[in-house]
Length: 637
Image 1 (spheres, rainbow, N blue to C red):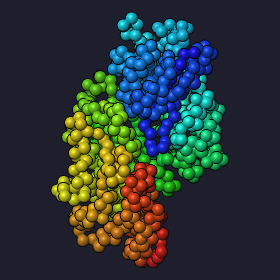
Image 2 (image 1 turned 180 degrees about the vertical axis):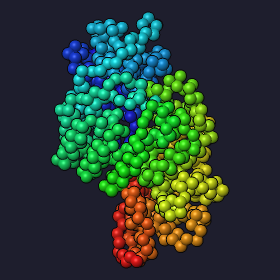
Image 3 (image 1 turned 60 degrees about the vertical axis):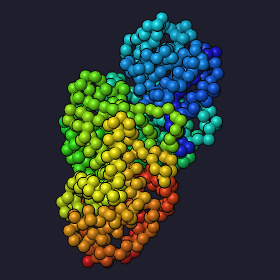
Image 4 (image 1 turned 180 degrees about the horizontal axis):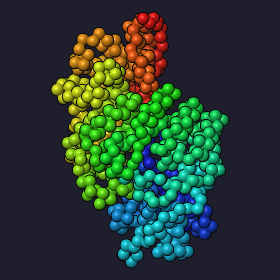
């Protein structure tokens, strides 16, 4: 029997790690072939980033080791494969995954024998047959291999497997649960393919149609997750909610959750074209306590950019209505914007942020820097030349993990300039996006910005641009240091010596994205921040007597390391005012005599616990803003 190993190493989040689903799918499919099951014995998965020496020592007489690669494990996989080849020269090394294309550097390394391109199940099965003398390599589509020192490439074609075979139902992950005291997260795949061709996405270059998988297999996988007490389920479909049966799948998930308590949470990349279906799905999940938030993605608000990246967004009027529906039903909804897309300028990027805020997205706008993914349309040399795309190599980190100083570094190719965006303006875009996330979505100055927009006509982005100017002119303040920190980080990235992450030992060992790091920096000096920011706010309120009340309310509702339950005696109904606005139902500020009890609950005062529980776990959908507010006294005028 030929010993077969598979490697799909991932980072560990606390005590949680993902099953190696992609590698498991290849193994499950291949071993349905009787010849392969006679010739090969599957030994184990490498699914964590172990030390290379420790991982190699655990291998016994390997015949073949396959590596599933993406941006977060590519360099590790190369180092692991090289070490294996040095100890076991006859071991066959196979590379594949989203990080691999026909031009990848992996094709040139002596320690790699075969490279699989595109969807891997059928090519992997045929390769295993070839290696036991049952097929010729030139008959296998989508592979690169070496023959007599020469690199050979076989025909490129779309290979759609006739039926998906589940690694869960084949028991491939059972031993992982038995051997490790870990909380495993699962991947659920109900279909494969994407009807869209967004230039920035891996799916954009895949020309295969969308294929729905057997619904009974999907249900059986949900049963398996429920029975094995899997807490978190992530759906790998490119557009969940695209098909009517997706609502049936959700109903079954909720049914199993009601019976067993598992899976506890479900998250998906939702369809961009069926917003009503996606709303119904998330409403049901939210009512069942399983919702991780709904995505209302745009990527850009500029029509020029959308044309350049082959994308169409939902109308803003529909977005406005959806935000009202999500807010009224207490469902977290977040929007995504990608910075650095071709055709974007600082002005269009800023104006896009303004539109989202004006249409009610106050709680969660997620900003991502554009990455040149290996298999995306945007990574094509002609596309790069057409839009004068400029990039830098930046160290790649996964957020909310404890860094391993001895671990092999991973890297990403990040867009920092195009024909429409200079590197200097790229920095400005990053700073304003981080400021909006930290000071608005995470709540620090959100109430002031909303009030000034509705009552004094101050645009949200004008408010935050002036905040940046204030910080520059007052570098000794908490705000000034936070903004200077952001500029310094982004300048370092341009110089090729930086990352999009940060850490603070006061908050423990976790790595943070820069927007959350900025919030944490300010939260540590919470009351000093508000004392120092008062002159900036006075410039907008110009003696308006509501400012002291609004200041008290704003400080009280943002969860911070010093939060306590407070009773506020005020002359204006701030709770109703902002609640109406969050539901896109502005009705003005009502006067009277009110006592509002703002219940802090069990907010940790310990800095590491606060950062983990409030900022990490609650970072989406306004979970770091106190919602438990009651009227102790309510006398309206």
